[in-house]
Amino acid sequence: MGMWNTVVRYLIGDIPQKKKYRQQANVLASRRKALPKEYGFVLGEICRCLTACGLDLRSDLERYSELLTLMEEGAAAGKSVLEVTGEDVGAFCLDFLSALDAGGREARRAALNRKIAEIWREEPFHA
Image 1 (cartoon, rainbow, N blue to C red):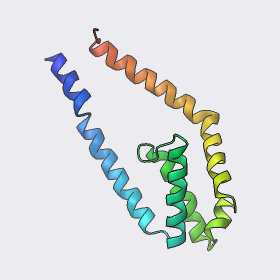
Image 2 (image 1 turned 90 degrees about the horizontal axis):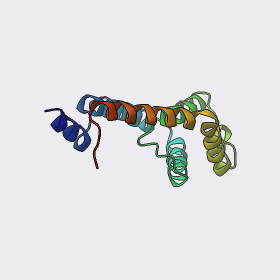
Image 3 (image 1 turned 90 degrees about the vertical axis):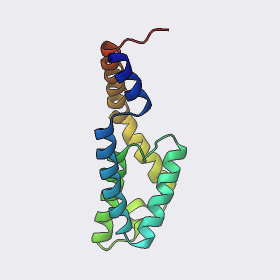
C-alpha cells in the first residue's frame, strides 16, 4: 500500500496543499485586481521579466505577495507606479532577483533537499 501512496502523491500531489495554494492564489489575484490600472500593468510586466529570468511567481506566492504589498503601499500613499519602482523597471527586477540571491535561494535549496530526503526515507526509489 505504501508504494501506491507514493505513486498517487507523485502523480496528483498533496490535495490539501493544492487547496491551500489555490486559496492563497485567489486572494492574491483579488488584491491585484484592486490595484490601480497602471500598477496592475507594471506588476504584470515585472512578473513576465522575473519569469524570463527564472523566477516563476505563479509558484512562489510569497515573493508575489511581497511585490503586491509594495505596489499596494505605493498606491495607498498616492505615488505613481514609477515612483515605487523607479524609472528603470528592468533594474528594479534585477535588484529584486539580487535580493533573493542573497539568502532566499539558499533557503529554497535546503528546503528542497529536506523534502527529497523525507520522501526518500518513506519510500526509496529503485532504478
